Amino acid sequence: QPWTCDVAYERFLGPEVFFSPELFSQSWTKPLPQVIDETIQQCPIDTRRGLYKSIVLSGGSTMFKDFQKRLNRDIKRITKERTARMISESAEVDVNVVTHHMQRYAVWFGGSMLADTPDFQRVCHTKAQYDEVGPS
Image 1 (cartoon, rainbow, N blue to C red):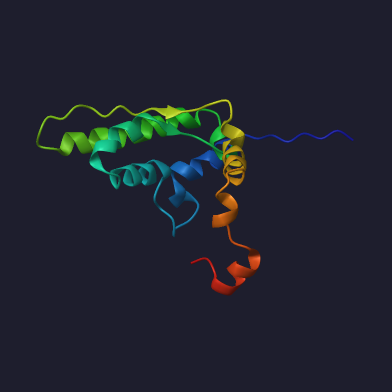
Image 2: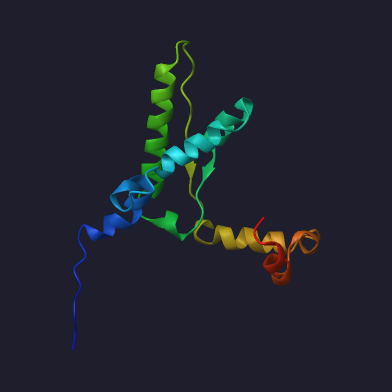
């Protein structure tokens, strides 16, 4: 027998966890744009503008409709607020969140390329080594 399933606001809750995690967990309250910004801010100062210009999305969770636009907007807002607080007049930071045709499978593609390098066998660990030493 045929059945239907109405999906309304629920379809927006999935990607919203990246931008408002406090809605879903009290123990994790830092949104993805803030994590990205803080990570870039920990990099050497002369590399930061380049990193903001090429934030590349990868993985299926980044395939939600307008995910790139939302992330770009939120990171741009963070950088504008920081620039406004600075005493000196500094140039606005260009933020560019990049999507690409391999986005959904980029992580697996990169992993397979890494596994194909000659040094991979030298640096990887066996399960026995992991069980003996652990993740450290």
